[in-house]
Length: 121
Image 1: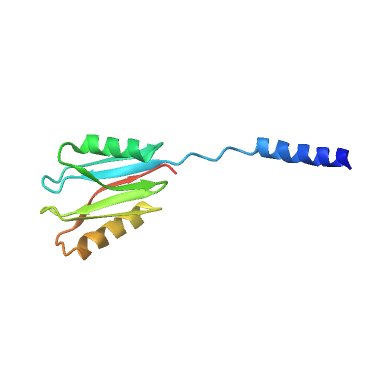
Image 2: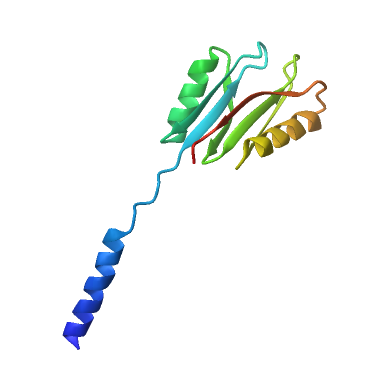
């Protein structure tokens, strides 16, 4: 009985050890300055903080992170007057559609997608 249990446990442990490691999450972010229209983005960072730092660094002074995403795509729709909306989805098209809807639902006129980014996962 003990021998059979040991063989069974050994088989289970070898299957667990042989299983591939789970892939790490990839993060991205989009930053935006409503006063100047400047924007920045990032993708494929190992953590949210790194993704946000990169997006802010690309955008410049006066910017703020308007969205972050994990294993997905993010998009920003904005207007020349500083109105904006953002969205995320598993696809670029989905993220852009949500960003446009959010921009328009805030009463903004002239919304257009001005930034998008997707992680590789």
